[in-house]
Amino acid sequence: MDIERIRNFCLSLPFVTEEVKWGHDLCFMIGGKMFCVTGFDKPLKVSLKVPDEEFEHMSNLPGITPAPYVARYKWVLIGEPDIFNDRQWEYYLAQSYNLVKEKLPKHVLKELR
Figure 1 (tube, rainbow, N blue to C red):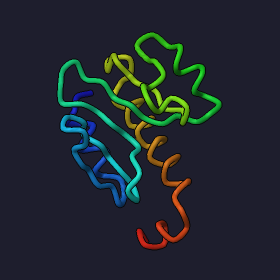
Figure 2: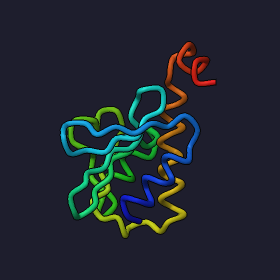
Figure 3: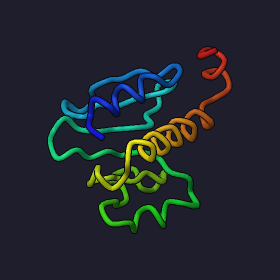
Figure 4: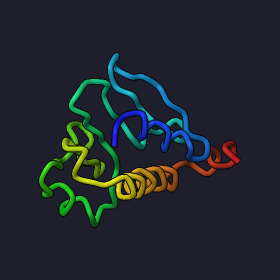
């Protein structure tokens, strides 16, 4: 998976926006809340949210660590993009999207519809 494929997949999800934050991070958001963050630099590194019950397991896989600054919210940093195939990437990106979307306030969800 590369940054363009991640970008294309994330932008194919409903109501997703993208924004460059902190001068070098490409962030994908739903309702103004981030669900995926990646940098433009190589090697590709991607941060995303995982379910609470999967966080410990995911954080201990080779190539994955707790994400700096947001690990307490159950985000992981994938530092080796080849750890997943394209189908797995799409699964984890969609899962992060859905986890963040589920936590949006009702009025924000209503505005998205």
